[in-house]
Image 1 (spheres, rainbow, N blue to C red):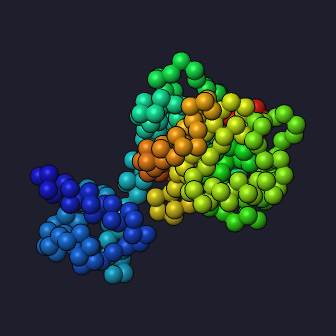
Image 2: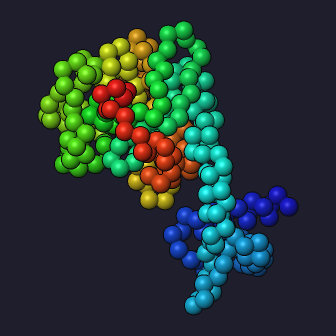
Image 3: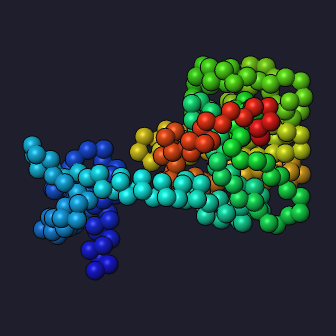
Length: 272
């Protein structure tokens, strides 16, 4: 039974990632399952309503049943609930604040968090805030995949802040911002050392859509700069990579952002 279940789930995963219908022969070859067994499994999945055949060639593709189940799960639990176990594990392993930010209308909004418990000194901001893209690790994590022109277009609409709005290392000019962005590209992750707020540092990785590969958000770790140095931030990357991969299956893009947060217009100057 477990073998058939494994094979059935493998077929569903293959069809989900294929981007279109597949003939029985291709499914069998890709999964190294005998054609006869593949046909039996597809017939069973079709009978349960998870798979259907195209009218023209009889190829197999997913039905809307899995999508429906996913939407039901999201509507009853919410993304923040689904992401919480991942964030709590990340926070527990590092002792720092783990956060999930989602992209909506060229904004990065923090929607979930988990606080580490290894230290007395903590950084614990409110949720639902919009991240200042030009000086945060989450902003860098999102923008590092863009060209300079694309990143500047988005950041300029949000602004760079003035005076003492942010930390001492926040870039105050376009050349300074682009230099930080170029460093982020070389590293492959966002890093904020006393930039968004004095005494606070953070490191972040983008969360990518499992099919398109486009960023849909970011997962980050933040805490006092006395603990999160550049060297320690780099040590967090394997854990952040694991969390980002897990969250990519949950955060499906802008439509996933809770409506009450998407509608919220929090001033960027208070966001961290």
